[in-house]
Length: 165
Image 1 (cartoon, rainbow, N blue to C red):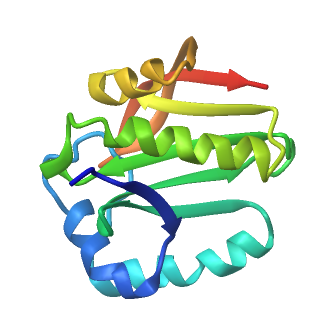
Image 2 (image 1 turned 180 degrees about the vertical axis):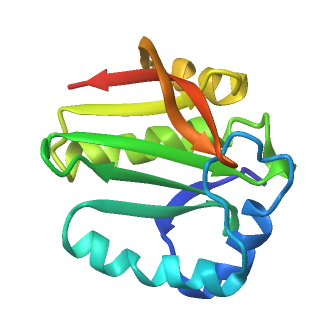
């Protein structure tokens, strides 16, 4: 059977699965700390309004209909032609090309549907796997931003990667 990867708008009914993925202690570099399934539900309920305002579009990553991660694009509030993408994948599926495939799907959505001219990705400098995903998908490293991301109250330097159309 061929593996089919799709991205679909996130659903509140998947809150428990997202919580399972995001509460993995091996997610050292992902700067979203979800404390409960209820907290995740609150986040997911905001997605409809964010989409309506055309400021954030969050998707589940599905492999053969199983939810295995998440990916989203946030549109810059002042420069509506720029978006920032973030992504995460369940540890069970790390190293299988899933993040790269999902990144290409959301990139297509962002350039075609949102008419973005620039997409950025910020990656904590120690997160070599996420850096490889962005580079594999043709993003150009533009620099290092000092203390740009915070994770567990620790500030981290981040690579700034971008692709333009």
